[in-house]
Image 1 (cartoon, rainbow, N blue to C red):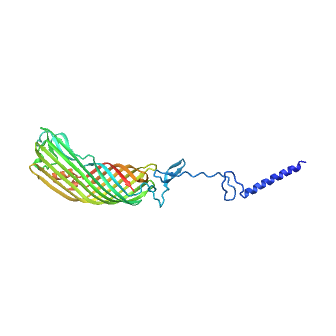
Image 2 (cartoon, rainbow, N blue to C red):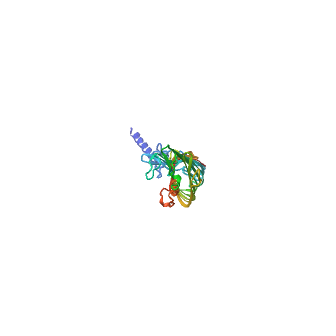
Image 3 (cartoon, rainbow, N blue to C red):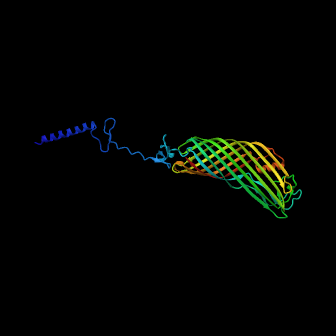
Length: 395
């Protein structure tokens, strides 16, 4: 009696399973969480894809892609946010060439420019006996002195520009030595062929000046670069002038003997160099380096004048010759740049060497020995070193 019901239940179950299979074949059924369908018409039961990572920006507000390793994000790779029609300064890389004006303070010390002018000895000189020093040697040695530099840049595009720079440095140093009888002071700079050179003095003093000025016109262009670094090459023109002056005064109870010397180099020539900078991707800090060499063709002029209060011209001679002077400049430092690069401040260590010039002490020895052959002396360089600080406004 119950058999018909069992047969009816089986028929209903078979019909339901058949309908489900048909619906699945035609894409009428989807699993929970599935929002699409596979290409072959079968239902896609895989989990929904993960959301893309949030965009990353550097400190200048530029979107950057990040290199991803096995342990996650490792660092900056590529700037993404730069577009051709970008009107924002922040779209440019931090090393981009831009129009600017700058002012720089240099605190430099001239080296290899000292002049030993007097020596305190024990009593009057006895013929055939070397003098015995009893005090310090009087030396006019320049110390650290501030100078300045200013200029402007005209940028043709992000990768090239023209830079105009004027530099000026003036230093002056004073020194004096004094003794009392029976000790005396002998001059190291007066001409040995004059009677005054053998005089005994009780007081001596000296003033020594070393000055230079430079005018540069440089073309700078990017040689190689990345998102946060760049190397530029430099080719340009340089005008250079180096002035040296020395005055020594020797006093012996009212009798004065004096020496005045002056030497000047002036010329112009070519300048070549490289500079580079590397910026941090998460702050405005950067490091930089500059190296330039200049070949200056010019003329050196020098004068030596020895006088006294009774004879205004005991020795008076001058010299002039053409020379090629090589100037080597090196600078290393660090700085900070504001967001979008409007303001920059940087400072570092500066070294400059002028080769094949005529230092004051060499010129004095030339006159004293009557020897004016260049290759007889190897002290023909004057160097400058110190710290520098520059403030730049860019637009």
